[in-house]
Length: 254
Figure (tube, rainbow, N blue to C red):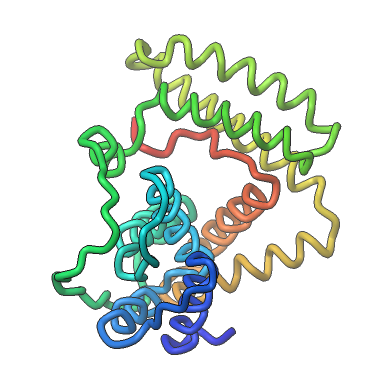
């Protein structure tokens, strides 16, 4: 697929149609300008899809849908996921300047967000909450069958360490907290390394190509070393998605 805004908007429109159970909502006018700004910023399609998914998941939790979702309603979630992606891969600059969207009279299907949820979205989850989510996702990843039996021993050990860490995470401070964060980062690297070793050459080449495509918008602004680090991080993220693995490292500060 091309990287021009019109191609990007067409793909987003198709994806939104699927999410709306086949109901077509055109990405035109102000919506086209909004989605075009995502392409201008260099937001990868998969990142935009993940933001749309996040909106729909929250929408579904509030009960049965009453009307199709417009792409404008997904803007905050798309930008949130893009910000998370940039932090994860080490990208700090966009390809261009984002186009600001004006206020909308139609705010879309009501999806209430509690004060606690709003605060968490802005600063990230607490360390205990993060560990709880990681454990849940590890359990889900194992149940999916994508990891294979060779992962069992590693998953058992990681889960045991995380359970122990969760029991004390709320009370650790100073050097003890820093040591815990370093250990989480090490466990994260171990999981990704094991997952990567389970890919054959063809799968690894395909994911590497996808990582290059995701970073194409930013490459000209990065040094060779910075791009290499970002590419490695982007590849790790794709491997994580391939196996349904959580991010064990705590990325929301110290």
